[in-house]
Length: 470
Image 1 (cartoon, rainbow, N blue to C red):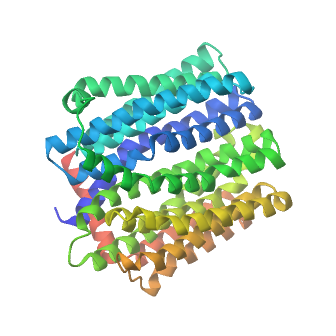
Image 2 (tube, rainbow, N blue to C red; image 1 turned 90 degrees about the vertical axis):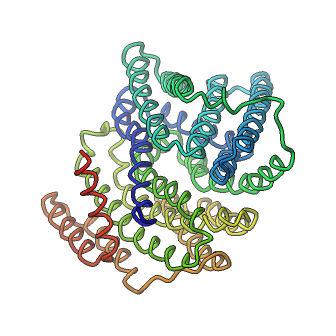
Image 3 (cartoon, rainbow, N blue to C red; image 1 turned 120 degrees about the vertical axis):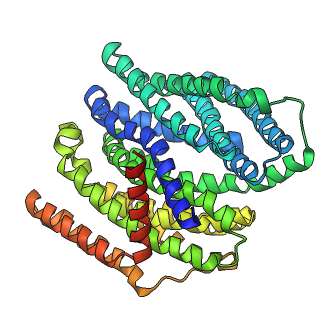
């Protein structure tokens, strides 16, 4: 299998693993919106995003380091050291999390604080565990873990929300229990910790290299958290929890686009690291970016309209206003996905500290625009701010990444951008669903016709190979 086909094959593998977990987000939105009030759902969304912030700080972003160092090494001794060091660090981070939670319990009134701390710790271990699975090359088990976690989340959500009427606490229970059981079941099968974890096993040189690699990614992660999550804080402060609940529902659907972006990123992360030393990396990297622009734009446009056509029955009437924000959120994710492509230059070269100036500038721009626009345009101000921020970061990355690789995109690469503009006009100006369907499919046909030939050929080969295997 050549590297292009392998890249697309990896996308299929990661798609199964990731779509399982994110499909839950899609399927559970009706359940959440029918059984949980907008202000409670808005509070949970804020708590969840604060937990994501806590994961990055407590773990020093070792989730990225453990994958990078396991992927680079097949020596069991090195792998044992990488995994042992990572889990020793997590155990100490857990004690820090409990200490912070205990302190806050006495001095602040925070709803569900113990469960927020528990959610943060469990998510931290889960994220590290699935990166260990990836780094060891067990991609199929990465898929199984995602599917298993998804199924358990559905089951526990139905139990706690419908059966036991636990309200918003039921979401905490479901997410915690599903991940604990999922890790336990997969560990019984793979026995990763039994094979590789030794508390006293340590190689200080490798430990320092992992910290040197991962630590610069911490401010990077904090900035990305501010880009993705500070929006809620601005909305909550200036518009209230109800508006945050509306925005949160729209973001649940936008997370489907982010999932597809994550799938491409994970497949590209593995491929780019292995191909970084190749002689024709510039040509190969350019072809991948060119293909990503077409495929991802077409996917986002099509999915946005599919969601819009079904929004009435997917979401309770109290949240219907959120539909107007779906399209610009999709455009924002497109720029985010293209930006993530260039992030790999810093990871491939292990020069992660060079990643900081661009993300810090973008975060400052985002906070400034959020402050200025949310007071004038409400939720629309937040959405517009996100688009301009990721567009700025995308342009910055194009220039800054030339030290690692140089991509060349022909003028035909602007066609997907034109398709997005046309789709936006259809989304807001064409009222009839039937006309929308006709216009969207016509646009999909045009994008397919002008799509680069090598992209279409590889997609066809992969599709037919999957059918043949079945």
